[in-house]
Length: 283
Length: 109
Image (cartoon, rainbow over all chains, first blue to last red):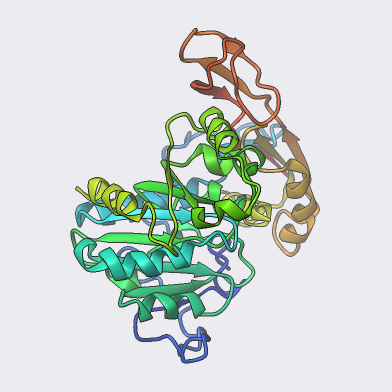
């Protein structure tokens, strides 16, 4: 089995452009690709690249020089494999001057709605493409496609986050053009995605005013890694009890370097600044 | 529940390093600021190791405490709770320890 990406176990499915079904279920059966990892940017289960070497030869392999010593040193980061695949993705993206953004938030914070409007208003200029991550359905990819944007959908099955091998398959399916902007919409979840490097150049975390101002302090791991926080649904501020000052103060404590942009994908407030941020990062 | 994927990663790394070798004990380091809950890894371990060379192995997890250095005043401190805030008021800190997420060693049968 593929323990890192869970494919073949958790049933990860990838739908490329043109494979989205009418009812949000996709037209690919999702069964034929469980290990079609032969393409260059997709991960290699054979480890023929020397990845395993250089970790203390002569000590790690219990060659029997001391039969009493049954301890084998490993000294390996548990996420080493994902991190290595993420670096492969990063190298692939960098070589093509593609800006990859990992977009994360809790479910319902407005990631897809933001991307729909971004695709309509700035998609062509940015050369925007999207990889959608959800446990099930191609509903979000269908929305993005309807907004005129090339999109690939990853269904993680039981998985609660995207990982680097899934994104490699998404890149293979989507094939974004050089010099473009790729947004990877992660599975809606403020906990698990924080740990998994996808090979992105920047992390953007959404925090919606309907969720409450305490999200950064309750989920510090996620917000600590953010390059930009988008405060979404600000058109609803008159109707909800949301303390923008507290939100900004807490965020400053957790992630002093993260910028905050208040936006509304309904009214369009703040969106030009979001598009400018993408353009600046893409340069 | 990313601890399931984390635990699967441990089993895969060990079985790739020591193919076919029955394992008696696995030693992990899971730091206080790693974002991984050690108890959840323990919960997943028996299920994930079933049918592998790690089945029945003991799981030993050390949990290094968090330690930070303030970039403004230079003080080193152990943060309390989720926010790493120096006594001087600065939140601009470098994390020195507590983010470990490592397989340190295993004991073979």
